[in-house]
Amino acid sequence: MTSSARRRSIDDITPEEKWNFLRDAPARDAQHPEIRRVAKHLFEAARRNPWRFATLAQSVARDWIKQTPDTQRVGHEDIAGLTRRPTPDDAIDALKRGADDCDAKARLFAALCLAAGIPAEVVGWWTKTEPRDLSHLSARVYLSGKWRPVELTLSRARLDELGTDVPFEKGQEDWKIS
Image (tube, rainbow, N blue to C red):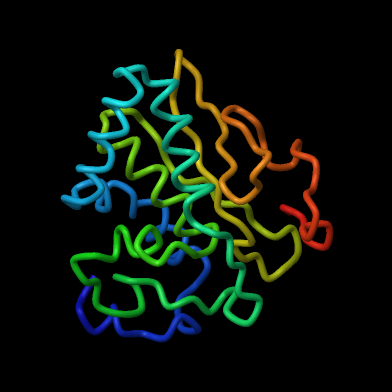
């Protein structure tokens, strides 16, 4: 992607282009020194157990970063590296700010897992109506020979539990994962 393409408006980018960028972002994010440092500490705290690590990484992305869905921005996010030039700290901006949306949470979780050598990826949830667009991002992690879903916006969600299976919490009754 050329540097001029990075400065395009999000309105000029198709949902498929956005998804391709977000799908591939964790592999890039996992190379960030801070992501690698956090992943190393979590892996040691988990006693090098991949399940414990994934649970801790889920807690970091889900609980340390307050969910802040920005209804004014949905579909119009300024995405580092796609609509603007990335900075060295873009991979961990959400962790530093302590608040962000599902995209950042899913990217952080997957990047932490990848930095620890555990396969993980972001999962796009698409609207069912035309024009199709990304409506939500979650993640999945490969543990014990199986891809496990990881929901990062609902505090009751546990590893290997789809967000659609989690009871809604106070204040979240008005939104659903589609």
